[in-house]
Length: 253
Image (cartoon, rainbow, N blue to C red; front, side, top):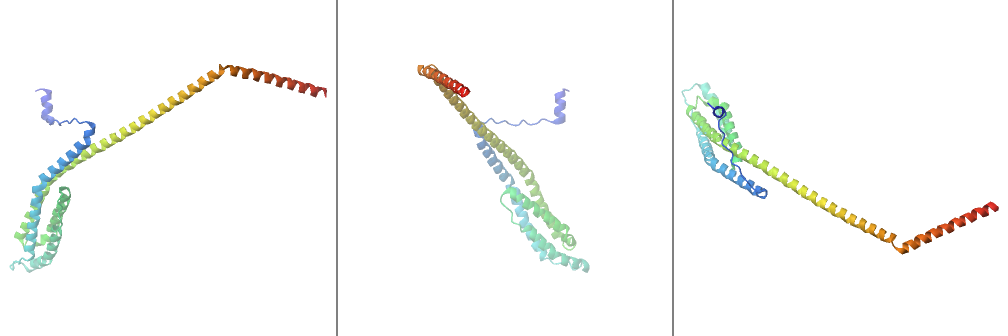
């Protein structure tokens, strides 16, 4: 058997992930579209389980109401009937509190509320409800069956919601990366603009320096500058003669 076939048997064959080619500017709309599709898929896939859970809660509420008004079997031991009499009001109160929670329409918000309802109902059955198993066997069996119905609905929602959250997390990462890249591009553009302004400033300074150098060259070649230089030298000579005369006068004094 070829090594490739052996590896496929061990690891299985993964379904290739479809690739999407987009222009960078199309990314936000693509992400928004995927988010909308994911939400629609979630709502569609959870509609029936949510309906079953709502119906199951309504059924449990009816069962609890019936238990509250049920008559005990007079043939039971008085102690059992006494325990049931004390436990029944507490059980009914706890079950009503657990079942009367308002269920949101949004699947993501619906799930934790429904899951909490199931958890609380189970705690009630294992708590005060355990004292009612003998006195109200059929009713408590119906309660457990109703809770099982809620649990199945929760289990049906769980993988769909998990897939939705995974999808939304991935899209959030995509959006964050897009915004990061967009920010970097803006920074690069600002840096490029700053560099261009710097280059323009440098070019302007070079032009001014060249103009000044040209003016200096022109001045050095101007005949009037030569006359000024000769006058400066003559003035310097006169100053030197004056200084010599002053020194001679000082020496003779």
